[in-house]
Length: 193
Image (cartoon, rainbow, N blue to C red; front, side, top):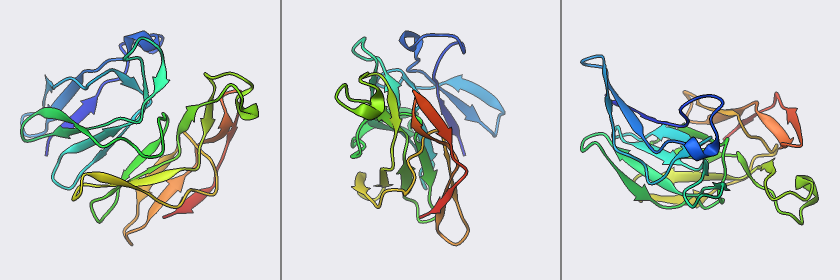
């Protein structure tokens, strides 16, 4: 199968303004990379997961499409057969980055946690609208309907975590950071969906 990489930044010290909208496609049969189609806008800290037909869901992340940094709830699908990207339904749990997207054995995608931009009136964000707060939210993308369903939230807010599909059909959500950018707290907990 083909692998699509949704690019992020040109260099580790680059600014958000240099977030890339480009993709690169790896063909394992020929062991070569090629330029893929562009996403609607550049993203960083987004999540990707494989769909059963070989397509790839790209969702969330921090974007600067309008020139102002903002968390995105937008989703796109990379179609491996046509080498194209098309819009998909927005993430129903709001814009966020540092989220995890996990391909579940039944073909659906579980998206968990991440962080959303704080509210200037929210004590957790220290009064800054640009502080990212970890979240407990979770949603499932169903490729059969091309739509999302909000599901039970996690018990621990986390971002920068991993999701792992288990052989029994469940998904483990592992580790990450809890709190906000002002005070991140690593968590070693595991939750199973």
